[in-house]
Length: 187
Image 1 (tube, rainbow, N blue to C red):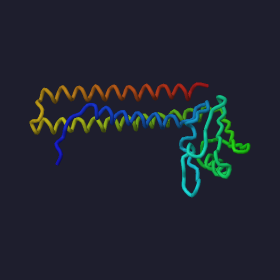
Image 2 (image 1 turned 60 degrees about the vertical axis):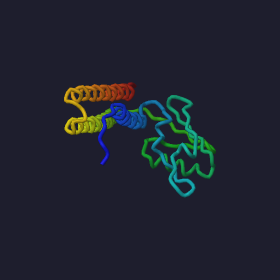
Image 3 (image 1 turned 120 degrees about the vertical axis):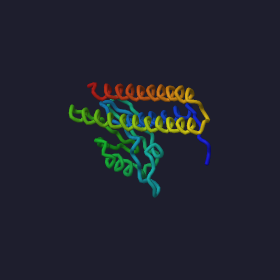
Image 4 (image 1 turned 90 degrees about the vertical axis):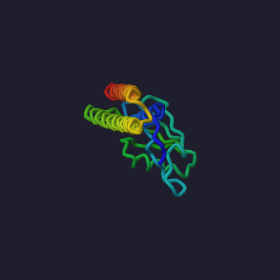
């Protein structure tokens, strides 16, 4: 069995992964403005297999409430339209040749509240993931002290280091959530 070692940079990297995932999930939440990330979850049935939309088309934002999807292969225009409708994003595609236009409708108050709840759910999942990494770090420290690899003083010092890192990451999650919440609620 490999010997356990304490590496605060590794813990930070793993915690940062939870924040990266949170930011990706939040970028997919629709606000009142158009964003190319809105179409990230869309997968198109192309050439016999599902592919991310970004591999068959270019998405751009020419206006604050308009997305355009420039499909590279005109035989896939219908498949892209179908994939956008099936993604259940509340967008209605209108195609002109190989270009698909998507108007981003205004959000009503009820939908905004739902999106805020979903954002909170994503943030809580990120916090849980960060706490799991913290627990792993604490477990390693306990084992190292038990095996007499580190002293009790070192254990306490490293414990404080892990907690400080955890607190900083949780604060980052809260800040990211707060920014997204303002973005969703701003009319």
